[in-house]
Length: 371
Image (cartoon, rainbow, N blue to C red; front, side, top):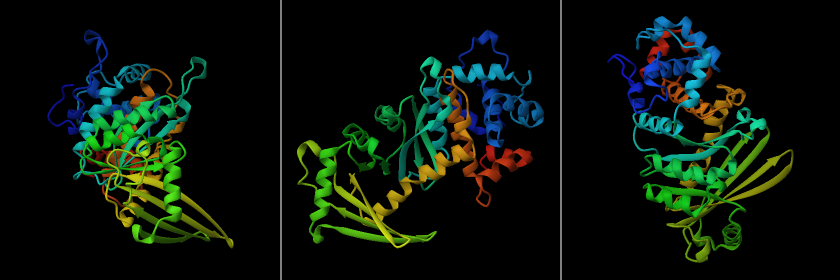
C-alpha cells in the first residue's frame, strides 16, 4: 500500500494488510479504499452506498493524502473488497496502530463481547457476528477485537485476543463468561493480573466464596464503601476483599490467585430495600478501593463502547451479512471511535462526527491526531 509521505500516518500501520484482488486487475489501490471507508465512517456514513457518495463529493479532501487517479469505486466493488479482506491480519494491524495512540501501559483493561444483531442470515444458517473487544478504561481506547459467531465461543475468542495485546502491568477484568483457568493463565503469561467475576458457571468456586463471605472473620477482610443517590434511589456499594485464599479447594483454585472479593449492592427506593452480591477472584493483591474502581471501570465498556456503537454508530442497524464484511467494518468503526476519542474534549462524540462532516479542516486534524 504505497502512498506519498504526506499521507495520513495511520495508513503505515496497515501496510501489512494484503490485497486479496488479482494484482493485474486492481484499479483502486487498497490504501485509497481504506482511507475512503475510514473517513466516511468517521463523518457518519453507514453503508457502502453512503460511503461512495461521500467520497465522490469530497475528492478534493481525499486527494490531500492519496492520488485517487481513478476516482471512487462503486459500492458493489467496495462491498466485495471489504468482504474479502483477511480480518485476522486487519485486527493485527489495528493493534499495531493503537499501540501508537496509547500514553503508556493501560491500567485497567475490560474484555467483553457484543453482538451485531442484524448480521445474521437465517437462510444460510449464519449467526449474528459476536465481537469480543478489549477496552482501556483510562485511555478510553479500543485495544483490539476478536470475532465469533456464537456468544458461547467467547471462551475460545478471549485467549486469542489476549495473545495480541500488550498487557504488561494491566489489571484485566472479565465477566463470568471469562472465568476460566486457561484465560486466567493467558493473562498472567501476558504480564498482567486478572479480576474475574464468578457466577454459577463455576458452581463450586462460587459457593465456596459465598460461604466464606457469609461467615468470614472481620480481621481477614478489608472494606470500602460508596453511596450514590440518583433519581430517587440510594445505592450503597460495599466492596470487600480477602487475601486468605489457602483454604480454596485444589480443583477450584485458579493459577496465581491472591484475592477473593465481594461487591454488595443495597438499593433503597420508594421505601423498599433490595440487595445483591457479586463475587470475584483476582491474581492481584487488591485493596478494596482498587476493587471498587476496577469493577466500575469494567462497566465503561458497556456505556463508552457498546452503547456508542449502537446509539452513535448505529451498528445494530448494519445489514452486512456476507464474507468478512461484518467483522472488518466492526474494526473500521473501532478505528473511527478511537480517532474521535483522541480529539480534544469539549464536544460529544455525536457532535464530533457531525463537525468532521461539516468541516474538512477538523476531519483532517482528527486523521492526524491533532484535533
